[in-house]
Length: 210
Image 1 (cartoon, rainbow, N blue to C red):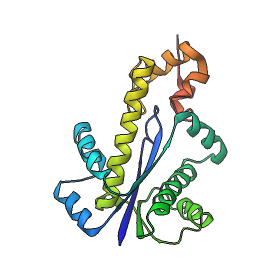
Image 2 (cartoon, rainbow, N blue to C red):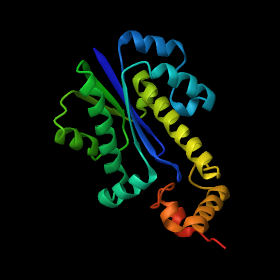
Image 3 (tube, helix red, strand yellow):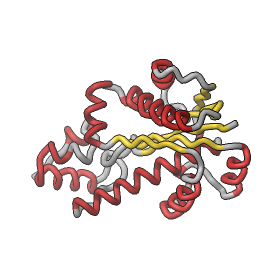
């Protein structure tokens, strides 16, 4: 029996994608990762996240990376972040169980009380046992999904920063974020900004670029 953990990264960052991850682990794999000190990604350094992600990628996994441009399009469609997250997590789980039919339980770090995730699973006819729990990252499979998602998120940020020649900062509120957003607007207008930023964040409407 495999237990899948689901978590995401990037939803609180103005720049960058959202990455939804699903990782399936056996009891033996859970014990192994626990012995390595695996925790939620917020409790690891960037270097340690990379080390752990390399190990986690050896187990059955799936990630759905929604680029900022795609994110902005989906947000206009759903008009709700939790709907978007429910869709992304259901896609990640669907992809995972399509290759591994021995996943019996999926644990999600709960992000909403409105059942968006469950509704998308019903549409996809996914019928495995689902556990949604706040603080779900205390479970090793969820922590594994958290680390893998964060690794994919940070990797995207670093890769795109190199292409741009501009470092895309993490987070959602700082002078640096406003500075970079203004740089992108001056360089290519809103059409360029939407390729790197989540436009519905309040920071977009508050930008004062001189």
